[in-house]
Amino acid sequence: MIELSKSVSKINSSATITMSALANKLKSEGQDIISLSAGEPDFGTPKHIQEAAIKAIKAGKTKYTNPDGMPELKEAISQKFITENDLKYEATQISVGTGGKQILYNALMATLNPDDEVIIPAPYWVSYPDMVKLAGGSPKIIKTASENNYKLRPNDLRASITEKTKWLIFNSPSNPTGAGYTFKELKKLTDVLLEFPQVHILTDDIYEHLTFGNFKFVTPAQVEPKLYSRTLTCNGVSKGYAMTGWRIGYAGGPEKIISAMRKIQSQSTSNPCTISQWAALAALTGKKDFILENKIIFQERRDLVVKKLNGINGISCPIPDGAFYVYPDIKQLIGKKTQSGTVIFNDEQFALSLLEEENVAVVFGAAFGLSPNFRISFATSTHELQIACDRISSFCARLTN
Ligand code: PMP
Ligand code: GLU
Image (tube, rainbow, N blue to C red):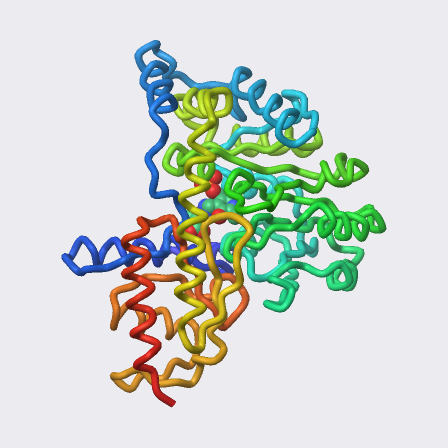
């Protein structure tokens, strides 16, 4: 039997993807599963974007492009950064990859050496620590607290920076909590970062367009222009444009990092799908009214889910500022017994028992580095969300001491 690499043995499969796949498998076997595990919009890709892709195919735009994106798309991304984020990135400072995921991975592969530390506030998106490990670095996790709405505090950031810190990974609105940093809150963090020139900022802005109420999205290099030269601003079309399967993500940042990322891509995947690049161009340059329409629907669902969950004894659910997740705290349910006698000794057991007894798939908090919680993606029809919350409620009502 072949011996696997040391780096692959240090990582797990993505828990979000594993949970979604399990839910899909059970569904295909005929079980009445409601899956709240997948972090992807349930809306279809808008028509004008689909049509741009079909047009590209028919016009023969089916060949390789530059490894890190075609000039037309880089130009559109450059414009997007100017108009939406007040950031100026030339084409040579832009990288397009196969999803935001590949962009983040390339950036870490391009910059990490053994011993380099990467600060990751928890709860975090499941892939960050494992990507850091794959790239040979060490994740340094800072736990946040529900009292602070799961946001990183400036003093905690300062206390965890060492000589070896290379990156801070920043994600607002956050997966899995939906917490968003206001200008003022982010400024306090960027003030700390100004004190430490060795630290770079990898900001994951993928949920930029999914914000609620009065929350206004801002990104680190916009809040503190002095950090521009050490920030990699990452984004993509998956979430805001309902284009998860098209696989287009991008970043703007220092030319040195961008060229190293290009080198990696030229030796691994080559260019992201050409047809998807034409579709992403249509997304970034075309009409955007659907973004607002989708946001209104997501906000209604958020309000429904938060209200329903907070009505359940033992569950406490903060109100997210953006994205399409809630991350309720289930401290009070740990140690209780299900009707079949299983002890809910941690959040993973909670998720497993909920799936077994009520056919509702959620992702357990341990996968995101902060327990005991679970994540619900409310990118699901309002009808299904209602039924799922009722099932969670009856599951919890049956728990005994
Ligand atoms: N960052 C975060 C926080 C995410 O939730 C996701 C979703 N998979 C991604 C990046 C990557 O998305 P994609 O690769 O589809 O662009
Ligand atoms: N980002 C989504 C999620 O967190 C998609 C799955 C993944 O890439 O992890 O569920």
